[in-house]
Image (cartoon, rainbow, N blue to C red; front, side, top):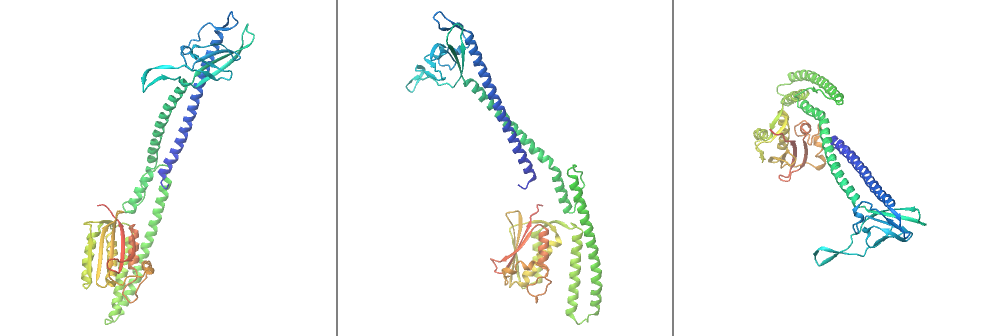
Length: 449
């Protein structure tokens, strides 16, 4: 989980879920207890009403002289029952109990009666009594004028308050889910809004890398401003280092050019070998001093380059330089753009094609195509002797030369590697499957025009 936004969103989401689930369980439990207590209070009120309505009759029994008030005590098998006992003897009971009685240990027995269904279907003519889940309370009373303790029992069907609990839980779940989704969406917006300054820094750094800006100029929030300040200090420090390097490059040019001019004047006109080498040294010094100067000032000539067009141009040049070689190019792209320096891309293509021409038997092939990872893939192949596997990585080292007898400085592929990696590309060597010699693969990030 390398994304800061994902970390913030994930941690906030976990906290929201835990908080809402805990709150939901707590509220559900409170509502359940509240409903149960209200139900229990209602039964206790019915029990006290029953006790107050009970009288001792002329046969030394207990008679209920007035109704409790709830019609369900008259509805058969409603679950709302009352009963008065003297031990195991039932003195009185509600009409709703029908053929049932409570035992001393609060068990309901009996209930053999059946009702004929009003709607007959599938040959079913009888509807059995629906079982009830009852909450039963009892109280023993010393009744005036009665010698034994009298047990009053009242029961109620718990379905009523359980349905209320279920409705409350369903409503609560809907509200909490909606609240959770809303809070997560708010966190998502907050995280993205809060990280906007970092995105601004990213955009500003991209402009600095491309040479459009020199430092971070936009104002940033207090929490991010120290980071922006440190980045600006680092950029300023790097700029000073580059200026010193540029000064050293200029000094190096003066130090080397003067001795070379003296050597050139002292060489005999007939000594072609030394004259050629001195001229070569001058060209190499001028070439790399110019490159160092361009690198020191950052993106001066960086642009979007049509690599297909540039490659065609380079192939035509090398066909004139190496007329004995069959140099070909194939591409399934009409245009392929990369963001780089024009001189750098010339040097990359020129170095590799020149090396291929030096070592090829007769054929050199350049293939340009677009890879699946939105890169431009360049493949340079030749029919030369190839290269052993253990030397394929060594050739990128500065100064490495495969054959000391072949003209060169040993810097070509090292420069190619530096330029390609600076362009955020990659370069590697393999054996050519088509021509049998060496194959140089280069991938450069594609840039949309």
